Length: 329
Image 1 (cartoon, rainbow, N blue to C red):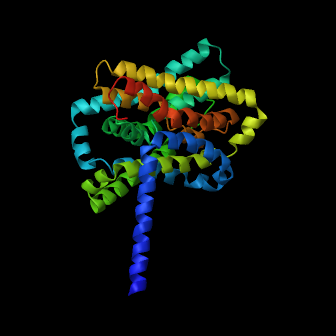
Image 2: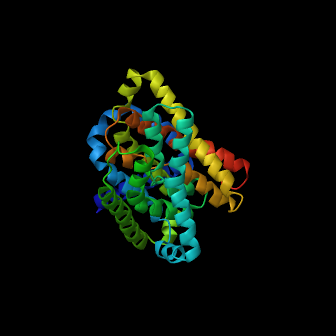
Image 3: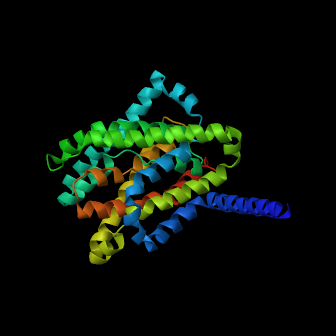
């Protein structure tokens, strides 16, 4: 009997310690992501083995955001004509207008063809799956982030290849139907698991442990990095100046788009929603096109280095938002 009590006490103590650790990570999620992205470089050898599990990691990040939101209520409100128009308008602006504008800028600046191709691929992609999770960490409007991320992800397989074809010509051959099935499985699978978890744990318990869930989201985002970073150190060592140029490009485009989208949205939307629009516009699920597009060394490097401004987003952009006085500290 005593042995059973001791074992139960040990398990309870371990669970409480794990919860405290997750809460600490959640409270320090901005620094967790920044430190973790450098730590992930030390374990990049594991990336090749984990690459087949990349869709699972993306689905997990979707699930972590969706389980914290009343999905049936969100679906009912999102189906109003006004919300549909807003969500589709933002989605098309993100995956159609933005790559077209960046392609024109690349042509005007006479950037190399591979660089222009990388810009088009990256910005014809939908927002990252963790957009809502980032918004929850930063005290922004996670509902609009989730709506736009899901809708943009679902329409990208049908619109994205057409955008790429229009801007780059027949140099690419993207399988839209494969992308559609891939994304539908991730989004619908994540929603199903989220509904099951929310029903099992209950909204009150999930809300009570929101900080710990921020920590779990941060861990999920860091594990996601391992397959993306596969081989990146060798690429940087082989061409350090090229890597520095690509890092500058991804940093300017990511933070620049976030800032411009936020500034435009804050004129017509509440501050929390304007911040979420910035997150959505600047941070894209570029790994989708990495898997579907023809192999290209520069784009692979672009995708790997793109993770740096994305994972620095909570630290860098929240400073901007906090100066405007509307996010939690």
